[in-house]
Length: 183
Length: 161
Image (tube, rainbow over all chains, first blue to last red; front, side, top):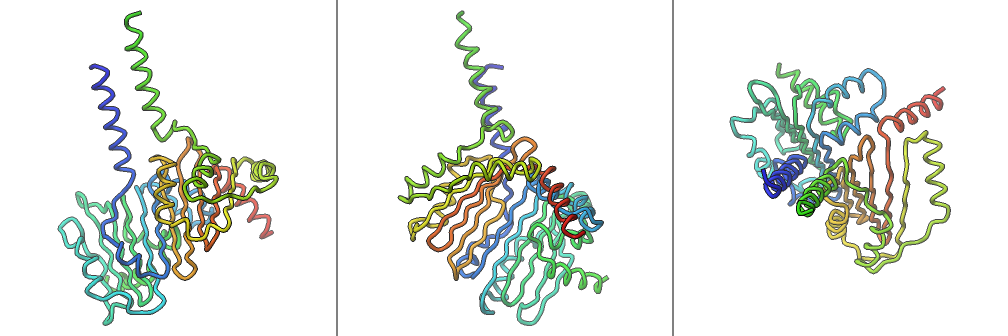
């Protein structure tokens, strides 16, 4: 193999490594950013998750959270806070749900109020019958949160992760309660 | 002797590949970044006395948990540093081995916080930029993900005793 060919292969390998390192968020939230009073974006790939997990305490709850994230490939969170209700509509929320209306994703939790306040949707991505990703959309009157988790995760693991890595606790508690009710 | 240029070519390719890989990439120069920010946005940073000593103390106190503390404070930057342009510029300076792990924006106070991070062997390097009103702060810190949590846990434990 000549030197040019080796250099090309090496270059392509580096490019693909970097392309994989930056996961694409499955919904476009750029329009919300302009309207929100506070915006928070958390992007933790596998490396950064490993780093962040070291800062979990040694209690049992955090030990379980560490065990879960050791297998994850990334956690990506976007939160938009509004000072007044009505910054988004139910129709707009539907556009964020649309990318998950494919056979690849299963809608496992759906909590819908009358005026989109308190809506929670949880979708899981199944590969060969195993959960390989999760997407959570949580809508309150003055706050919208999107969580994208990459890698193997069980719905019951959410409780351990909520409150860490930018995943809001109250949304997850609410979704878990509703999921328990549905079962 | 005729093969020498080819060997040099191979060495150059390997060195270039290693230098661009996440593990071996050389750390960016904080002072160089500060100087480039000054040039781009026509701002000046304030000198902070004894920062080297503070960095040394932080390393000792945290038992090597943190290292390489750098801090630059720019005052009276006015509206000369738009956050999106600043982010794009800093990313360009840092290179592709760095990721933005946290970004926040508060409309009322026009406050932006951006945390850049990269794995550096067994350690992590964080660059925290905060744009608040007329001020811009930049902090770079190296963190040992094993030693710092251990120190924090010990510290927390002592406080609760």
